[in-house]
Image (cartoon, rainbow, N blue to C red):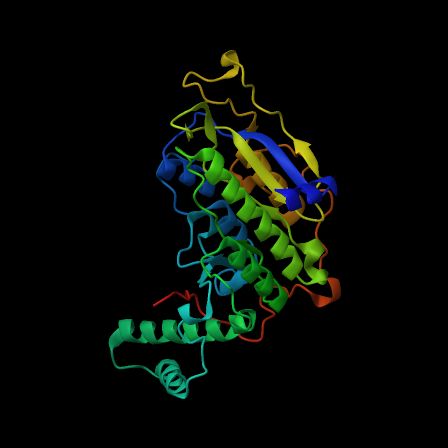
Length: 344
């Protein structure tokens, strides 16, 4: 994390220690449900939406503006799903999006024909009409995001390339409020020392490349928040570690209050829980509350279902609209229906 260390020294990285929840759940599926849902009293496995989606629900045009939330990849994770708002899933490279590559004349003729199906009833009842509208929405969405794909990514499966694409989408000025992407492989039951170092190195390169690609006028309008469903157990397990509890969150950006936050969990045997795991010192929703209250400028209570005092993670609010750099929702030239761009 050499390059991230330099940002930390410059006060642009906040590290929150001991983040988790109690009682812990060491299942990948249940733990991700807790973190993505974010509701303080949600019973296990009863998640209909997520904390980011509930934030998107508060924005003007949430029911019709598809690009308020964008996920890089073919799936939209739970935390990006609202009761009204639905995030768009965008591919990592040009050929994965139906209607985006219009360099072949035959393809253009096909796309125009498919789009034209929505101009009048298809005669195939509500399902045929609905499908026609959806496909037109896909084509419209592909046209909107195409400028961000003008430069090819070297390796579309690489996390560096995914964050590069996020920066290009921000530079395009589509008015997106939240982007999601992910780096997997941290479930290091074995070969932890080597694999963990490789992953952190990839993360370090991705953050550096993201900021190198991001247009300067957006620098004060972007904060990166990291999370994982759980940390690792202190006890070694075959040159790795098992599923754990307390972990860390990173907040990265020009406007965060850099430094260490929260209390590191104790490592002494007496400080561990009954399963010899770290005892969390910070409820993960406290981090969410700071982001919602001090960065997104909304009341966290209706979104999280509980009161969480400020941790002081955000030093300054984002620039509201420097030189018109962030269009408000609804300001794009073309409004689109709720659709997803997907591969295939």
